[in-house]
Image 1 (cartoon, one colour):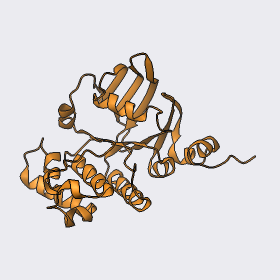
Image 2 (cartoon, one colour; image 1 turned 45 degrees about the vertical axis):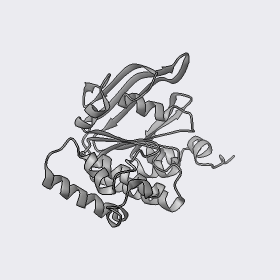
Image 3 (tube, helix red, strand yellow; image 1 turned 135 degrees about the vertical axis):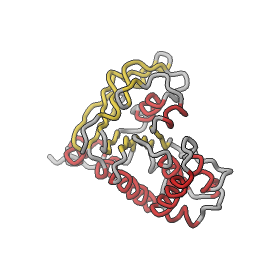
Image 4 (cartoon, rainbow, N blue to C red; image 1 turned 180 degrees about the vertical axis):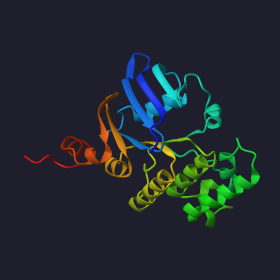
Length: 245
């Protein structure tokens, strides 16, 4: 695995008015890694992703955020896509009045290589066969799980160097959650660097190389995901298991 740092956050703080949502965190994602940020609802995970992507309404961000060695401060969302940084937001955000096929084309709007775009659509239809079956259907008629698949495939159409996933399992049935995580592992195995924010700590840590635990706006633990899966503190707090003793 290449050790080049794709994303580096140092001393990042986020405040809304007088409320400190994120309290000086450090976080790093290296090329080819799948890194997960876990924690309870309200821990500051989604705020962290929004600070990275510059989509925080009314929040003030301090500290350093670097992507491929360049500061990300004040970058616009469309510029991030041009820089091959893509995000699948919480709630999916598909274009409901467009077909599946049109949504995928929107994901490739920064590209002009028609043959390559067509090849990529075929590739992701292979990973997401449900989308291929429904390619002419309006995205708004899909189930939540199918919309999550579409949002991921659309983000992947820009050939991202870094893919940010915000709570991809939220609101999905257990069977669909397993399917989404199968896809996340498949995408990771293709060498795409991923930062995954997820409340399902067990599945996230099973899929990831490394993990960070966030609580009340602070990073309270980090390490190899396999080690964290077996850490009694993580098991008791996030995996619903009592510590032995």
